[in-house]
Image 1: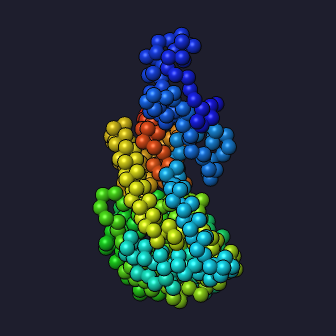
Image 2: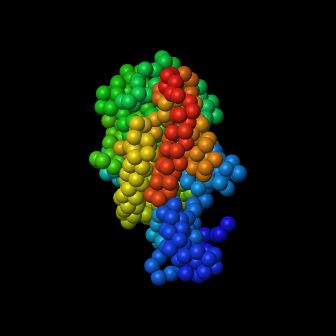
Image 3: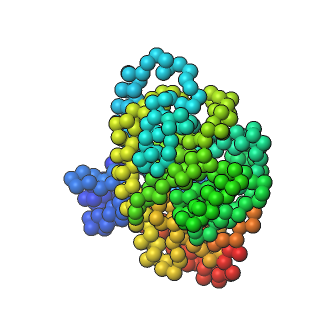
Length: 436
Ligand SMILES: Cc1ncc(COP(=O)(O)O)c(C=O)c1O
């Protein structure tokens, strides 16, 4: 009811108004602050905290009004977006831009930005790349759409996807005219067993979506051997690998086989979704077809945003932002994993080494779905593994719990809600043969 920023009465005034002791009001305020609703600062009255607006994918309007904690895995923290530094890059880059930069440009993207991205990828992700190989896109979803269309143009019309994998990416490939086939994933990552007709596979090796598994060294070799032997392409979705917490980030596959891997990166999770900037590193023989698809759809990605992002990268601000956010997310992950471990000690939490989500394993898909629906009714949103599986999935059931967009107090509350409904559902429905 109260809008963000509203000032609440002091504990003394409210205590008088409602006729309770001041200690009661103080405890109520402390609890509200803990749950993330209000902000208390020494020497001033409490104010109502802004709860991040929930964007609409997968949650209807009625549900949105009840939503208090949004743990859907694709959401990063946006309140930390460095607005002032970004404005400086916008102002300075536009001030210094040549007239030609404001006209139609190279469909592959601004040369300065491609050069900055190439440097960034080699220092941060072990990706071998010259600026000429980088194509600037509007994000990984856009990159994948271009790649799927380019492959079709070359007569390649069956793409393999990890099972499970993000349903949106499969829909994009399907909409581009590709047939989709499933490849299984286990605790070591994707199993490189493909039908003969499949000439491309989409994988997320650093932090598989949604299982969170890191592709093992042996499986990396299997995958690269398959691509080399059959002349197939590996499409590497490197969507959140920058956020690895317990040791240095795993290098990208692309660095091991630049001719066989198309690499997709994005600012969607690492920076801010609204910017809609991403990049693909494309082997020589696919490049012209990808650029043709890009020209036929958007002609080129916003040149002004590219100028600003090139400036931001050149100043080292992107790297600084990533370092800061890695600390923010590490703390959130630790709080969520610890809270789940305390509340549900017998339920394994997987995929915690990297990224912005973990998977809480469930005894069955039925229980996972009931927990999801009941938690949503209680104001806690997240997805389940089953929402991302397809054709003949036989792996475990789970809840995909994102911690990107919820601060620690909210994660504690969300974990308690999840634990409560999970215990009730497990008691009501004794575990069946899991998932099979
Ligand atoms: C698995 C996966 N890949 C890629 C993306 C990024 O998409 P985009 O770069 O278009 O924002 C997401 C975003 O949620 C994702 O979950």
